[in-house]
Image (cartoon, rainbow, N blue to C red; front, side):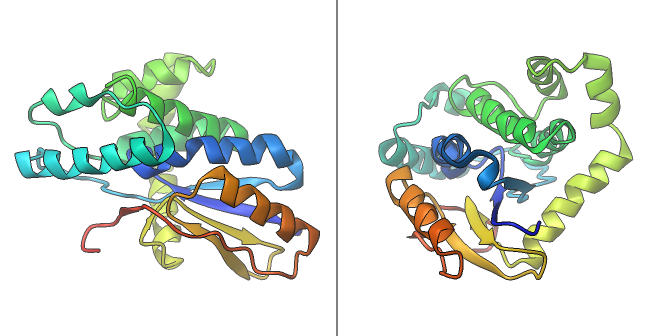
Length: 227
């Protein structure tokens, strides 16, 4: 892009991204096409195969409580009554990629919807049947969604998103960066959750003086394994 824009690295099963979801929506509503957002799936825990342990559930619950307190976003804590749940973030990421092909605004809306389904409705967004039903809410026929979802092309595109995040040095989500053109010069807006009251003024100031470096600081993140 040759104009000011944002790149948003997120994951459908990142609780801090769910907390940050209203901020991204506020950016869309406030700036519209003046400040387009490119969504990239970060790859929080893709291809996980082992079920969550009791220790895992305790750690995740602790994160959810912090996100709820910081953001006010709804959580259904009956999720922690599930047994043998495999926290594989690749399937919902792939579903977002399918819907993102209908336009970046649709991709962002799909991310919000999958977040809500997982966190506030306790739906299994690792299940293709659940994802197919959610895609239907965007007017996508079940057969068309499953054909795209199961395709090697979409699997490769999703893997490509993860690779972009890794090559950019992104180690946690949400991460929002800002750019001015095609020269790959980007500045950090935030690494981690920040409220809209901090993010929106920073972006307004940056758009008024695009040579400035936008930064709202660091906040709570869903970190990649090993961090």
